[in-house]
Length: 190
Image 1 (cartoon, rainbow, N blue to C red):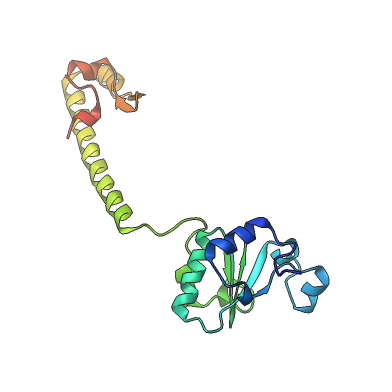
Image 2 (tube, rainbow, N blue to C red):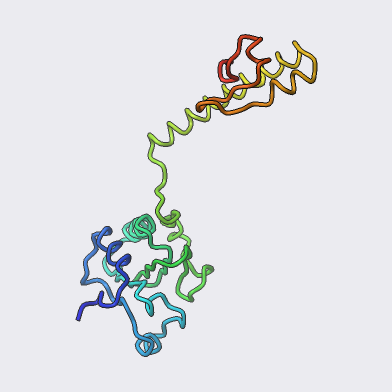
């Protein structure tokens, strides 16, 4: 009999992605009687084969934080942090400590709690995001200039029509009044 008998295939797949030692798994599926004997919660994910517990004996705090982060990235929403072990399950995102509440979650463990399936941005992603923000800012400034030109150069009714922007082939363009100004798109400004 394996520790992963009756365990949800998503748990097994996540465990394999983590590359953990199966010898350090202390609990997988639990039948209701076994769950009562070990003091498990009445609605425990263990009862549905949706969880496993893992011994952290010999691991540093940094290694434990890294394991929590990687488990979240692998799709484990539930994270329990105990003295000497961790609990991971495929339920909703939540985390708790020794008294099974979020209040008892050790502060140091919070560093590993990235949202399920997400990773903190890499340096390259962060740089690209910041460059995108800068480009958006330039476009916004260009749009403000275009709107001011339109409002100054035509009656209010025409300006309102020109500023009624419509997406066309992935670009934002205005009505015919923009074309009279020689502008096909507000993105042409700036």
